[in-house]
Amino acid sequence: MTTTRITPPNPEVWSGRTDGDTPEHLRWHQRVRPARSDQGGASAEAPAVELIGFSCNEGVRRNKGRVGASEGPDALRAALAPLALHAGVGVHDAGTVVVQDRDLEGGQDTLGNEVAKLLDTGNPVVVLGGGHDTAWGSYLGRIRSDRLRGQRVGVLNLDAHFDLRQADEPSSGTPFLQMAQADQAAGREFDYTVLGISEPNNTGILFRTAEELGVEFLTDEECSPSNRERVLDTVDRLVERVEAIHLSIDLDVLPASVAPGVSAPAGYGVPVETIQAVCHRVARSGKLVLVDVVELLPRLDVDGRTARTAARLITTLAHDALSTTPTPPTGRAGNTTGERHE
Image 1 (cartoon, rainbow, N blue to C red):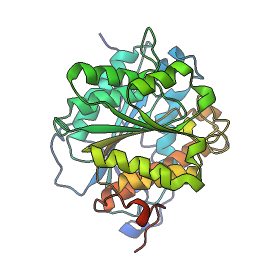
Image 2 (cartoon, rainbow, N blue to C red):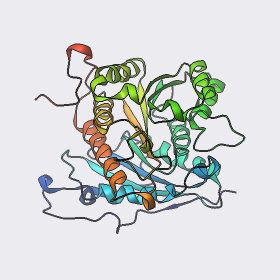
Image 3 (tube, rainbow, N blue to C red):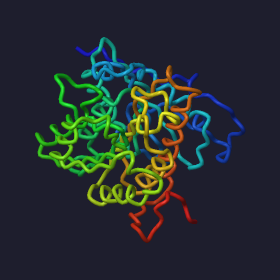
Image 4 (cartoon, rainbow, N blue to C red):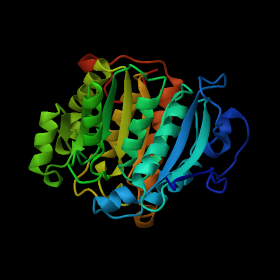
């Protein structure tokens, strides 16, 4: 029997400056509302982003990383709270799945059930992790979702690591191999792209596993701002061949100077400019349905840099996914910078 519990949103975390109550003044903390448990089906309300947290250290512990990701969900909420929301959208917070007694598998199963309910509202879902084991719970949610049944879903992972590790038990290093194996068993296509791979931090067997699974990837060195066109072309190929996208952002993809508060700080990393451009591109495609943001360790974060950067990326995704019409990939002749030309 699982000991996992779901805690309601903490109103003290959702706080910040208030300049007024009219739309042009609003920030995340003024828009957030508890998610309803009876939502099943598209809401008649304005579009909203659906939030849920996953508080767990066990996956990182099993992967022999630095623990502390269980504190990530509320740290991400606190970083989001004061940011302006320019799009006329709502924010629904479904609380946090809290894993107890090292019951990772039970926690992931509970998260999957909750994510499925949120996806079936028709709104984009953002899961606040947690270690990268969060992504397996997100996956369980999307394969249980009525909304996504029968659709080809592609996974875009922004990460220094493949997380295709073969191990005796699930961990933060295994979620995408678990997805590959589950898709194969169910007769589904496993479509996985990774941007930001650190060659020194992935063994030969991981590169071989990626090749065997047909994984498309770029290394961190190949994701420089000067190489943005190639990066966005890679994203465009994924967008073109799938019907929905599951975006997973492991904050250790960023340089340690920007993201010091992670389990495995990057000695090189992908510049935030590139990650931001990718977020713009995916969110504006009209196909982004699910995001997980993982590996934040608040107790090791310097000046809240990692949480602030993550909050900026989440805000970008929310604005673009909910306030723009789907935009087809533009290729070499179009806008590949992530900037609006209006």
